[in-house]
Length: 112
Length: 112
Image (tube, rainbow over all chains, first blue to last red; front, side, top):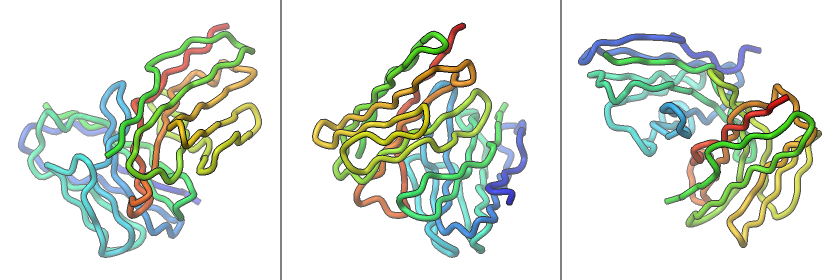
């Protein structure tokens, strides 16, 4: 049971480039999330999804887009990378309201 | 909206006890979570409180007082491997999709 798998683990982007952060889970969880974590800070919610075909904005959605075509996959798209998007990105999934999240191992992104 | 406060850093000695406090203000409380995050790794779920009182899980206990907007995480018989950040997270009553808002985290350093 792999849990939540994120790729890539590390990436350096130039300003203005685009990329997709991949996230897949094999636990049949309906709920999935993208958070970012800046150094020494807590996690801030970017986007979330309550099921295939349904997505919604979190606290800091600007500069990002998501899609949820299947229960398993929840990719995060950066269209025009900016230095402010330098951060560690975590994907997570959840089964029910009383359960904690299962997090992926994270993607460390640097925009230069 | 929600506001979650926890101390930035705490230091304790191996074998001792440390208590990490978390205070929150929310428009509608529906559960509080504690996560452990080792440096460079993903957060892992520790505990969940939705009713007042103490939840004990081995060396870790978590307490909640909803009327005071207050929780603490108690770590007993500290071990070197407990050196990590501890994140307090709150779920809002109206939060669709089990969304959590995270505090900034408390970095605990365990010294020999």
